[in-house]
Length: 264
Image 1 (spheres, rainbow, N blue to C red):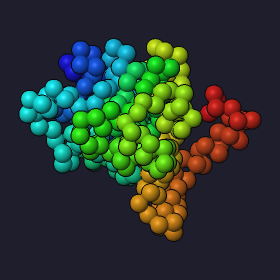
Image 2 (image 1 turned 180 degrees about the vertical axis):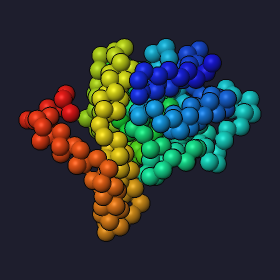
Image 3 (image 1 turned 90 degrees about the vertical axis):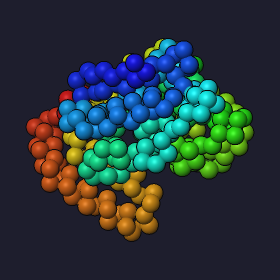
Image 4 (image 1 turned 180 degrees about the horizontal axis):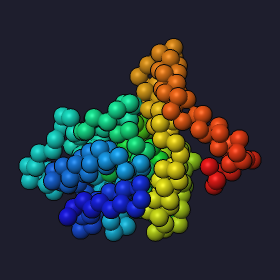
């Protein structure tokens, strides 16, 4: 299968498994990826998601051999790469549209062209020392059509994004870390294990509060300041009502003192 799904506790790992094509995504794989994300979003037992690629490569983008042979990719509700047009700022899950749960990309090797765009879909990117990011599709006249021109400037800033978009050059793991494109850099081969541990840590937190804060961070991009602050207050009010009192009681009972995140 070109997409493998595994679950450990509240963490689902979605793996692009086409190592013979450096995990390039053809239409069938794009559909399978979109379905995998929809299933994870709709499963209440799943609290966080990890996306990775098999065989030491994250994803080399769209399968240009398939494109050259006339393959057609979905370009409406679902992006050509599959889940790339999921939105992160909805309060309720809408399959095929929303992604309310944290997503972490575990990047070994190349995350380029559409593969870069899949990595940008994630909230956090754990990069191996082998990781390479780039708009390699610049060479072939293939546009960024899976969120790259939208998400990349928001993550690294307009100037750095245009450096990547216009030149197509490779950005290695250390430069990506300095830019904020990578959130963690780990030794070669350790990206997946680190990402899964991070996803499990995030899954431990009270979920109404966590998802509300996450949604507010994304929603603010499309609002003016006043509207964003008001929307944050609405989401925060829901978390206060659902979880804050119980959390305060745990703190009063001695949990989490001194910034301890282990006993919460």
